[in-house]
Length: 183
Image 1: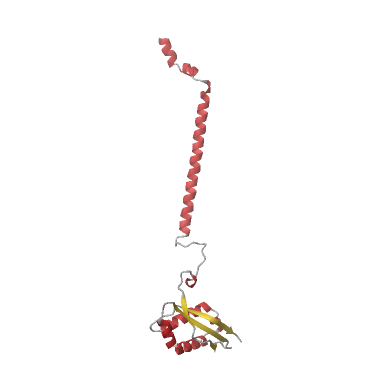
Image 2: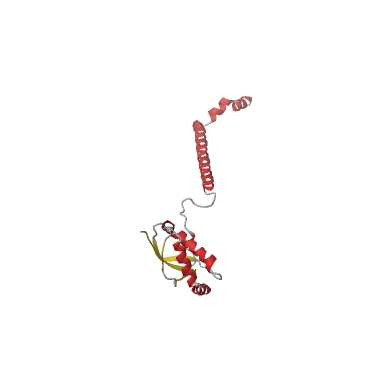
């Protein structure tokens, strides 16, 4: 019995009892661990790349604006108010302030909210003041200044609201005719 126990405890006896394909199991286990290592490396690289991209995009768009958007002036957005226009002002024809004066011919229309009834009444009451203001405004400009049409519209709107109208305000200025003739 002691001999049987000695044989069982003998290392050589155990190897003889194992089947011959036992050398394949350690190779499969090594292949599986290597495959898992590569998968873990790929996932770590993917997480790293996504993190870097997210941080970079957040840093570039810190102010919340996209870099691919085109700036749109407030006057041209879809949410702008629909205006009615006061068109009783006749065309203004005057000369410019240049050393060789040019001629400007302008037909101005003033925009106000569609449901506003007070603004057209005040504009009609101040029609003479409006005509005089527009004539002197264009007479005090040079041809170069008059080429900046959007700036001219804003200046006219602000001057009319600040200096001519008292109870109401206009929202916009439109030119149905804007001719500058240089000599």
